[in-house]
Image 1 (cartoon, rainbow, N blue to C red):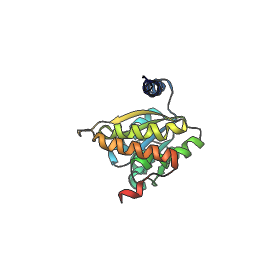
Image 2 (spheres, rainbow, N blue to C red):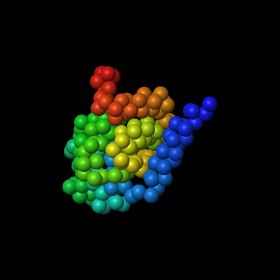
Image 3 (cartoon, rainbow, N blue to C red):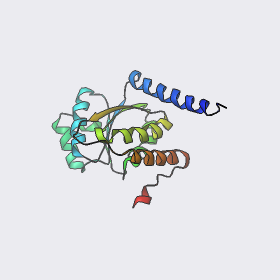
Image 4 (tube, helix red, strand yellow):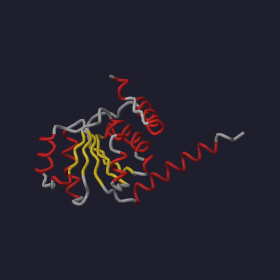
Amino acid sequence: MFAWLVPLLTVLFWLGYRQIETYIVQPEAVLVLGGEPEREKFAAQLARQHPNLPIWVSGGSPKDYSRRVFAKTGIDLSRLNLDYRAVDTVTNFTTLADELQAQGIDSVYLITSDYHMRRARIIGEIVFGSRGIILKPVPMPTERSPESIDKSFRDGARAIVWVTTGYTGASLGR
């Protein structure tokens, strides 16, 4: 009769636990999702507050621009890791999940625009969560409305497919 209650409660407890972990665990890296140059400027300010954390920029601006932004803020460029393999938000996470896990990184500051954060968190919780990596979101304020929930569902499903098969589905939209 209430067989549906156990899976529902399991998911709710897991999500609650993950949310609590976000407050307890100190991030060990900064992850910036590319797509807007302003995100890298925003990340550079956060990186100044955390001088010992490596910085990962996934699918960001051209190398010269990224290096200039971080150097201008006084960031040691040896902390900067520029990764251009991602072609969309799902691959921002799938291209780095195993690499971050291999480096022993268990938690990251996730930087993206506020309107994009819901979708990024859903994907990140699934992909990085499958590797034991916790996200601590740091949204960059904008004037834009949040993305449609449809995109979040679609890309959340793609993330689940990646976790189970290794396939991102990135080539389908091309």
